[in-house]
Length: 301
Length: 246
Image (cartoon, rainbow over all chains, first blue to last red):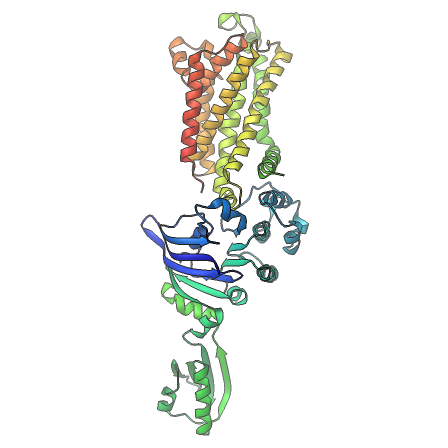
């Protein structure tokens, strides 16, 4: 059953339409990624989901409730990490964790997330004295304190070093294994590929794609690229007739580059075998989520 | 522990970490009273209208100064800063309403005001022999009303300023006229009658007159109470309607 439902969501600021008819639904226990260039409407979508903004039209439901009007019942099941929100500079890490624990009926022991996020040594430090990465980790800990059923993370690992990022990914995967549904806004393709069950790509306020990371990669313009130096040039027409072929390119050093799908590669191999052509220096490259993402959002750049 | 109590405790601890803010609210009014009293002529009998000493008139005035410091100078940048930094926004995604954070701040500032006032009265009594207020209930009622009015004014400044810096500027500009109406420069009782009638229509002018009457054993005039009450309702009402959460 879907725990988050977004249906034809539309939101404008003045005359500028930021989100223009976005729909998706997230089943319980899924990690759902929102990707897209700056200004594509990711944060606005998330703000509507957590009830900080009211949609101009369309419908948003969290566990069947309207997050903007049913605050009393939605907020207890929600854990949120936002961009551009700070704490009081002189509040210490421990005080922040204790304070937020007091906000919920059945909070976790805040020492657990603090420990896992490497904040145990920082409990006495004032918020204003923390580094960007430490603040970020504190916000993640605060988002987990109320045992949320739905966790919304806007730019989870921005500002974290590679080690901390990996630790946070592990933590988030564990949280999901506990049955929590996670809506994740991210700029990092590696993060989306590693964590997300499904990914929505937003472009200029509309949904450009919604698929599993593997599905998105498969739909990339050049899903698979084979290149080699043939012992003898294969017949152009035979190449052009290969299934699902996208492009053929001959480099000056005699290298042949053929882009298509796995199917193209299979057919190419048997074509070469039939004609007794040897492929020297054979390289096969698979597209990454990066390629798929750039294809989908190319018009933006 | 309930969320509101936890928040009140946390905010109280945060206030105690701002020694400068504490000084202006709790220390400065008393210090000013002591300094004023150092001028010999202000301690002379009959130096003020009605046969009182100037220093006697300055006790209620410096009591009001503490309220102005807390309500109009300290409160607005705190509230506007909480909005500007996204603290209210973050809090509104939790089961606790951000209103309770504003309320905690107003309660603490509201509690600091009478504390500052009592310190002034006691120091005036001990150092310069200023008699304690003759009519305590009347004095307390007036203080409670001014406290509410000062909180309303501070909340309104925070509501109308987009940033903490902007609210500090507004508060600083407002300080001089407001302090004037409270009688900080010239006690309201010593003002020319035409001016006094205008000043009595302002919240702190009315409060100044009401406190002076309570000091000498009387009750405030109905008009003075009405002026304070109307200002409180109007200021707080506009603040509540116009406060932006983000």
